[in-house]
Every structure is written in structure tokens, then in C-alpha cells.
Image 1 (cartoon, rainbow, N blue to C red):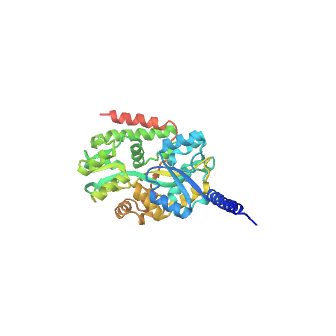
Image 2: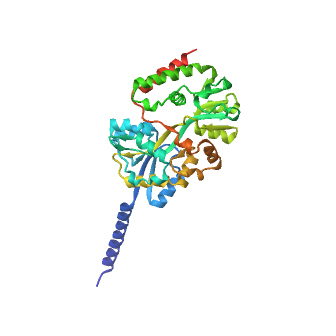
Image 3: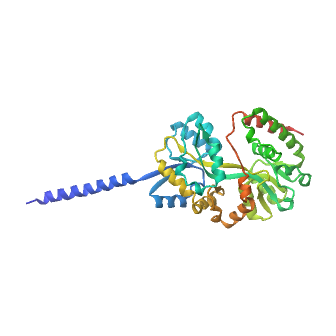
Length: 361
């Protein structure tokens, strides 16, 4: 005959065993994706939907290029499962610090991604026969134009047309040098590894920008300053970024962002795999999840920038969708000049040119 004490002990053992089994089950099945990314690229509702559909917890760390590099360099590529550096900040960093692992493109649903952007990112992140990035979020520099001068200003060098004298603005920064070079029939990116050729291109652009100084109302230095100038009508055309143009278009349909005939200048923030990440499968699941058009649209609505997902413009806010389609048809998308990695020494050359333009009478 079993005593009450023995029965009680047996029940306690069963309960303890059940609790232990439950804890082991949770421990065995719980997954976590540690994502280091930019603000707006992992909205709360997107994270919640991913967690619900996959059972994978997402830990988001907000960052920027310099911070990502610093954190991953300090740990030798550990601490995160997925990062989002810009595509021109991968090869040099990888060559120097070895903090990423190559992408297995067979695990990426490429059918969901804009082909031109996938091609550009593979090329820009290639090192020793392997590539390290998948395109995620992109943006461009081009022209913001008031309808009054839209027939005149269709490319960067049109900002120097006498018809818009005193009513234009651009920055004295490297994108202006690059944009003007393309508009003058040169290919500065193709000359990146030929210092003598690149210097000759810069010399032509320098002369053009000095000759153009009389057309410039002011060289803008801050986004708010530029938007105010365009709102007030003090300037009618500017070299600037797409999201700023779309914001103005929502306020005043007479102002729009225009992809220049020589091509908008494009940047891409990527998906990259830290070398010592612990959950690669979850990283690929996140990449394929956010490349769904409906999900990608939520990221665009949050960040103001479009993603590389095909068809996502169908699902963004109507104002943003219409402004985007006005700026970019398929030809304009395929004509975007994507920034490649910058070789050492080029930015110093460019800085000297910009200083001389600034100082010229």
C-alpha cells in the first residue's frame, strides 16, 4: 500500500518533470534574429508580423554605417545575424577586417528583387569571386524642378542654362561632381581605378562648375534650407534627393523630382551577413519576408525610401506612389548610376576640386 507521502512525492516529481520538459521545449524551439539596421527599416508592425508568422524573435539595434562597422569590427563579425551597410561600404571593410560572410544567393528569392539593383549590388560587393550583399533600400540624387522650368532643366548641366540664372542650387559635394560628369558625357565610375583619367574628368567638371557659379542662388548645405528655398520660389531647380522632391510634390504638385536624362545617382543599403552570426537561416527568412511587395511598402511608408522589392509601389501611400511613378519609369530605373566603392585617394582629389570651385570668383 502506497502512503499519502509517497503519492504526494510522486505527483511533485511528475509536475517537476513536466515543467522541465516544457522549459526544454521552449529553449529548443525559441529562435532569435539579431538585426542591426537603420531607423525606419524594421517598423514595429513588420517585426510583429514576422515574429507571428515564423516564431522567430527579432532584436533590432538601430545604427549607421560607421557604427555597424565599429561594432562588427570589435567582435570579429559576432553579435548580430544580419546587418544593413551601404553597398559601397562593404568591400573595403571586408578586405581589411573580414567581418562578413558571402551571400548564398540560392537562398534569396531573387524573383522578388529588382534585377538591375541585384546586379548592381552583386558587382559592388564582389571580392575574390564572392559577393557579400543583397539590395534592400535605395534612394537617389537627381533634380527637383518647378514646373515653370521643367522644359529647360532635364539634366544636371541644365542648371547652368541662362534661362534659370540666379534661380538654382546644389551642394558643393562629391555627388555634384559625379552628376555633372555623367551629364557631360563622361563615366566617372569607370575611371575610379585610373587616377589620371579620373583627374582629367574632374578638371572638366571643375571648369564647368566655375563657369556655372553665376547661376547659383546659393550652395545648399542642409535639407531644410533647400526645401524652404524651393517652397518660397526663390529657386526653381536644384540637384537634390528624391524623398525631398516627393515631399514637396505632396505639398505643391507643381514641384517634382526628376530623374536626369544622364541618370539619377543611386545608393543602396544592403543586407549583409556578419561572419560570426549565429542564425543564418533566420537572416534569409527576414530578407525574403521583407521583399514581399506588401511588406516592403510598409518599410517605404515608414522610412520614405523605396526598397528593391518589385511591385511594392502598388501598396505604398497614394501620394508617394504617384510621385515615385512620375519620377521613375522602367527606363529611368534601369539608368540609375549606382555608387560603387570609392578607391582610396579619390575623395581627397575631389575635395581639392570643390575647394577651388568654392574659392573661384
